[in-house]
Image (cartoon, rainbow, N blue to C red):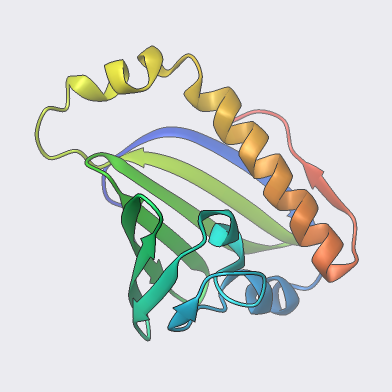
Length: 151
């Protein structure tokens, strides 16, 4: 499946657990409150999910997002430009977790760099947030994780 929008940044990490275990944690999404047992990757947003089974609306304090879930991915789209995608793939050590941030603005595309401080902070903030999520996944699954360099 082709992802919409323009790729702005990508970070990768390895979870040393079988892909089925990682998918069971990260791709478990159902209507109801968001938290450790539901939409784990977006738990910090809080709020409530409605809809399903593969497309939801997350009503969180101060904003709403569309959440899509598939057999190997979770995507959250909100605001006028933001789409974040998490993809799972097999890795020799367990599971490769890839997080991409995409610009899906349909109008005022010129304003996206301004909204993100000309992207100076987007990459480091995305990497830092992903590292926190990776550590949470490792703690929840009781397994090692590691942030990969590059991309």
